[in-house]
Length: 228
Image (cartoon, rainbow, N blue to C red; front, side):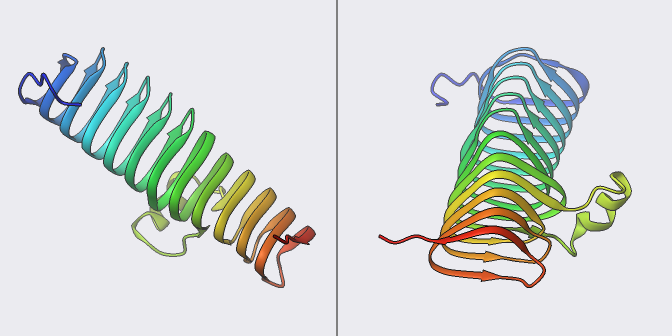
């Protein structure tokens, strides 16, 4: 994707930079990009606003990022607040903070802690997230899905201070996968092979094939064992 790269881009301070295709982009400060931008390595420390699409092989954000279009990154690490108006696609996503995606969010592996809001489908082979705030998605799909309340971690005390009164909980329409572990979750349907419903869960219907484990405090409207 970086064929035709026009060199490296480095900015310290406050300013606006041109879009285009770069080998490396290093932003340290407050930056605005009015066009699409792509790079092999994209590193941000501070605050950046991109009006178009962002494409990167490696993306590292420490601070705040907003993307007006879609974001595609093979490997991404978010430490802070990231807002994407379009969709997200990649291979590995590590988040520590708040992620908001207007469309679908898809990767091979999604892990970390904090809070998230996905307008469409949250989909990955492996999803492991510890919630320090609210997590929501229309649908969640994957092979291994483990989402629950984070009880410790760097963001635990900070999140309680930033958003007081917001309980760490998951809200989703449908959660579907092979191995599913949930706690403090509200969902219409949970469907999987091996399913564990933990404390604080309110689930309308659970469909499972091999195993269903449930905490005594969990509330499940209907249970159905699937065959075949």
